[in-house]
Length: 138
Image (cartoon, rainbow, N blue to C red; front, side, top):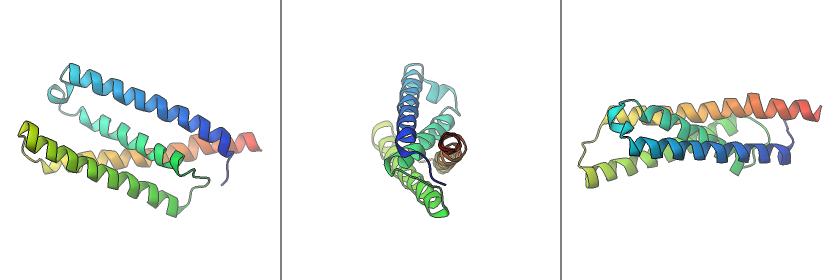
């Protein structure tokens, strides 16, 4: 399944920039109003959005032209790898700066939502971006 690379790359980049600004805005508000500590589940949608952004960013960066099982596996593994590194970073920060104890369930939940966002990025790319481009090319 091929699509118009130039048109799609620009549209995808616009979505990436918009999404990262949304994530930064939500994170700023969460830090300002203490949502991470007062709303126990607030980090779940944040990890989902981060995984969504990362999945789309990997699709854009590698200029994916078609979806195959290999591409799906590469994107999911990329999101997983970066999600695990992010969790390691959080654990180090929590231990050294805040003194919080390691929470296995929180870490597993965060990685799950990262992967869910990355999977949604693939589905969004497949259904929304590629189907639009396929209709334009026809």
